[in-house]
Length: 394
Ligand SMILES: *Cc1c(COP(=O)(O)O)cnc(C)c1O
Image (cartoon, rainbow, N blue to C red):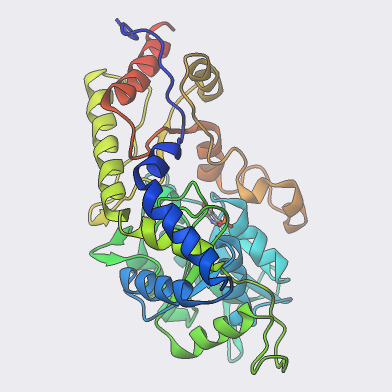
C-alpha cells in the first residue's frame, strides 16, 4: 500500500536544519565581521578564495557577487562582445545564455545529451567543424560571427564530457568557461570541475550545495593574467584605484558572506555524501517499486562524481504528477520548463521549435525531487511511494 504511513511533508529544500546544526558557529562568524566593521574584500574573502580555489584544483579564486556575475565577468575578461559568439547548452539556467547576450555577444545554443542533460559533445564538434577557420579566428558561416568561447554547464551537479570538450577547445583554440554553478565538488575522471577549463564559475546561491546567506559567487582559474583581469574588473576596472583602462563593475562578494561560507565549507564533503546517500536510496526504492517503465532515474556517467545539487527524474505526464505530489505534501521543481533557444527574449536568434529536440523533450519531462542532506529515509520512501502510487492508479 503506498502512503500506508499517512501524509507527510517533504519540502523540496529546507535550509533550517542546516542552520540549526551550525547556528553557534555561523552566528559567531557573522558577529565577528560586525565587530571588525570590515565589510569589503577583507581577510574572510581572501581566505575563502584560497580555500575554494584549492578545493577546485585551481590557483586563484576571485570572490564575486553571484554566480551570474561570475559568468558575466569571465566573458568580460576575454573582451567578448558584439560580433562574437559563445557556444553553450540550451538546457540550463537562464544566466548561462543571459550573460552571453548581456555582453553583446550571440549565444549559440546546442542540444544536450539525453543521458546527462549536458552539452552534447558530438554536436559541439560537428558545429565547430562546420565553422570557417580564418587567420583571425573561427567564424560561424551562418551568421558571420566569430566564435570566442565554449561555455559548458555541469547541470544538476553532474559533469559535462570534459574530455571531448577540452579536445575541441584545444583544436580550435577556444577558451572554456565552465558554468559550475551547480557543481562545486563535481568530478570528471578524478578532477574537480571548474578547475578544468580556463575559468570556472561557481554560485553560492542558497539552493546550491554550498549556499551563502544571500547572493554570492566565485571565479576560479589557473591563469595568473586572467586572475588579475578578473580582480580588476570586480572593482569597476580600476587599477590602480580610480585609474581605469577597462570598464568593470561592482562584482564583489561581501565579507559577511565569505565568513558564512567558510563555516559551511568545512561541511561540504559531508553534505555531498548525504546527498549521494539520498540519491542511492531513491535509486534503490524506485527499482524496488518497479517504476522503471515510467520513471527514469538519473544516470551518472562512469568516472563522474555527481554531487546531486538536484536529483532529477524524467516522467510521462509530468505536470499532473507534479500537482499530485504537491497535494500529497511533496515539493518539486522543474529545472527548466523552457529551453533557452525557445525563450521569448531570444526569439531574435531565429531558433525554431524543432531545434534542440532533446532539450525540448527534457523541458517537458524533468522533475527535481527533494534531495537535501538532512532528509530522512522515511521521507525519501514516501516520495517514491507517492510517485509509484500515482502511476499505479492510472
Ligand atoms: C544558479 C546558477 C547560475 C547563477 O548563479 P546565481 O548565483 O544565482 O547568480 C548560473 N548557472 C547555473 C547553471 C545555475 O544553476
